[in-house]
Length: 241
Ligand code: F6R
Image (cartoon, rainbow, N blue to C red; front, side, top):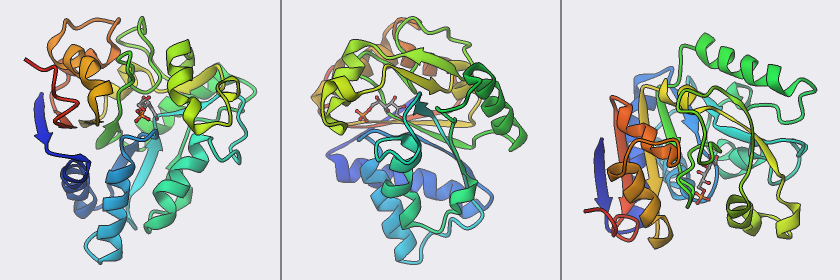
């Protein structure tokens, strides 16, 4: 695991854009996209490089990590909508090639299996962006998630619902369930790139990088992966030994 500590969120975004841009430049990149606030600066930097004519996303495709269950995809906080408004609408990535789990599927367990099969059929994700929850979740694999899990429904912890309440009108509006890639699914991506900003993520980053590999810190599963880059600011790095 390589840990890159940068001075601030702009430098973090620039490092992440260098990594992702490298895959995009090779052509036919399959990108794994996270939502939440951590990757926003990186998406803005990638969009800037596209506008400047330095990056061409025309041959890229993407898979999202997760989606709220029961939130219509037209809802502004569905991850389907968020990834479009924050990233896809600003680059020449074909929206038809940006896939996300369907949180409104009638057969939600079957939807998880279908989504894993779609990722496999595309040849797997080349580079997967990840944020980390204050409780160490990646995707929405909350503590206690099986390290080999596949895409499935998970119940959000009260902490995660509180953390995400800032995106909704009130905490009670945050859905209780999500459809999320499993830890096993995420681990099949060729390169994991974790982004964390701010002191609020320092404990989770220390546990993920330096604690025991444990289902109680789902992000620690990265310790098993052959190619991981953790790109964080100094505040998020402050509890590393
Ligand atoms: C979002 C996701 C989550 C977030 C995590 C951190 O697609 O999978 O794991 O990355 O909750 O969220 P932020 O970046 O908002 O602190």
